[in-house]
Amino acid sequence: MSHAPILLYLHGVGDGDLDDGWQGALEAALTRLGYPDLSGVTVLAPKYPNGLRGVDDDEPLPKVAVRAPRGDDAKSNRRDFERRRTAMEVLLGRDDRGDGVLGGDHVAPVAGNMRRFTQADNYVKNPKVRAWVLQRILRQLPQAGRLVIVGHSLGSVIAADLVRRLPVGLEVAGMVTIGSPLAHERFHVDGLRELLDEPPANLAWWVNFWSTADLVPTRRGVSTVFPWVLDQRIQAAMGDNPVRAHSATTYLRNATVALAIGRGLFGSQSKEIELARKGLDIPLDYAETVALLALRYAHLTLKELEGDIRDRYADALRQVQAASLDQIKARNANGSRPMPRPIANLAVDLSDPSSRAPEPALPAHLSVDDAVVPLAMIAVGNVIRPFEIEVSKEKRQTAMEQLTLEMQLGRQVGTNVFEAVDSARKVLKGPTNWVKWTALGLGTAAVVVATSGLALAAAPGVAGAAAVTSALATFGPGGMIGGLLTAGTLVSAGGGGIAIGLAAPGTSAEAVEAVVAAHLATAILRKLQGLSQDPQTWSSLVETEIEVTHEFARLRAVSDRAAPTLKELQRKLDAIDRALDYLHRVGLEPK
Image (cartoon, rainbow, N blue to C red):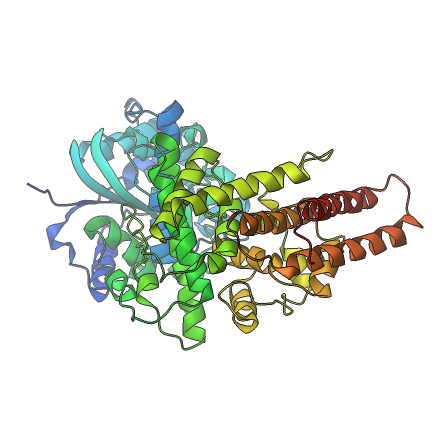
């Protein structure tokens, strides 16, 4: 039998909200959002204003009941908490910790009225008051159930102090703090920072709301003290003075605040994910094809993993898939292009922390010739970018072989992809001892800038130049999709613009080495598959060599012999020379 959720409201200084006006304000805001009213909720609002003024009782400070996880349990707890925090961030919007107000530690008590601040000062500095208030609250709580805590002003300090002292049977489904002064030194309760160094194991999430007109938080969020807290700014209404802005009823009338509390009490109401999955049966374009292949490869890689690395990879893939879909959705909306069904079916509900990323279906059949560049870029790139999780070559190769098998190209194509990558590594491995393939994704931004967005891009594989240029303009060189598109264009396109970009000082030697290696890998893969070579491979390397040589000679005439810039240019030249020498030796240069 499911029990009614419990709402615990902790008031701030003053008379303790004797009329409970906060409850009516919250209930009205919840029902406007479509949530139920509070009739099915157990509402607890302990009153402790007299105790804040001073007590004579010697109550013991409640013991910490919820122990901090250690070792692998701590890592797992933090990862699970971050997933739930991300869900709330998706629901409410990006966090805003504020820019703070100069002298805020002095402003906050003045804003709270010095007479009333005495109550807050008593809680923070008088152990008897602190123990009495916490014990009074705990006596009204059950030993088990699903609890949502709302703390206003000083009540937010009490909530933070209370959360790890709760009965172990109470699950804190969410904690919302409003108008909190926790970011300021004068409100630091003894030992609280150490107690909440990491998210408590009994806490699902914590969202802190601060108002632009409320002087008590002084435009500073709680995440400045506890970095794992989600801060949300509430825009003050026109005419809100600081007193009204700090009021609990003002905060609780706000739709975003009510949305967070409603999620904690009643769960998700979202129907958007089903709408997002309604796509049309239309052909995929080049960017959509690359995204689908990369995500399918990521899912196949996930199947090869176990334990902690599998859990972390699944979390990363879930977020990357959601971000990729959002990018494609925005791009298609701007271009009045409908959403293809295979892409729409990738929708992930990040606002539900327990949701999983749906597995993508494969695009329509690609020939080996068309698939060479995308497969090579997927093999050497990072398909869960910006996350970085090292997966063994054996597991990645198994995933690639499964991918090419599903694409009806045969398992050997997947094997050949990794053989080509290994051969390129061996060719270029010299005194620099480079192996940083991630530079292919991370270092291409400078090339894109230098070539005006790769406007000279030729047609890589199945896409025309206009399609690729448009895709790059939309996705940019960052992210999973943009990184793969940019890398694919760099190894498929010719023209002096790209050579100039690779020679430019803003492009690192590692990035150039990675681009050269990708050129080599695709050339070797074509040879292994018996395909004709792309003449752009040779011409692009030759043009880049010319530009780098020219830049080297220009700078060497004036610079110090040991200048780092010259060393970088020499590394670029070494990589290009090795690649050209290899292509010549194995007969892959143009006839």
